Length: 190
Image (tube, rainbow, N blue to C red; front, side, top):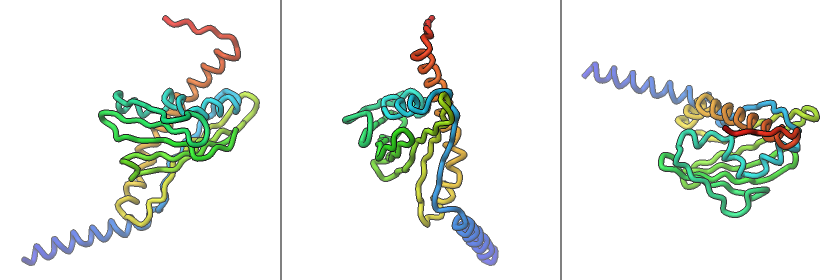
């Protein structure tokens, strides 16, 4: 019986230590990545302004090849919504909330039937006539829940690489598209 009390005391101390540690973590989480793209800001913004283009560069389909996208209504501007669902993914929706052309698109991402959501934005910044910085951010206030704070502290390490890969896809797609359209380059497919 004495050993059981000691074991329970150790377990209680560990749980308390984890809870205290969790409460030192921030209640707001953020995932943010930035990339420099060799196209004018207006060109990058116009491409991002149409949610249909997001299928081409985001990485979600790499994790679930059965994803099917749908667009109830407009694909451009405030209120534009992209929905997706797949065999291995929960249904989700990305909706443009507000637009500050040619700089910023604020959006909301929801899944788990709206129970889980992130706010976010994609921001273009003119660096010079032919170079643009693009920042992609998701953020959320997770409140006082200690277990959510622990999970939130790991989210950047888990999701950050997907953001990096998505932005690299975006860079490649935009630079090729811009060069083909504006410099009369012919693309030959094999």
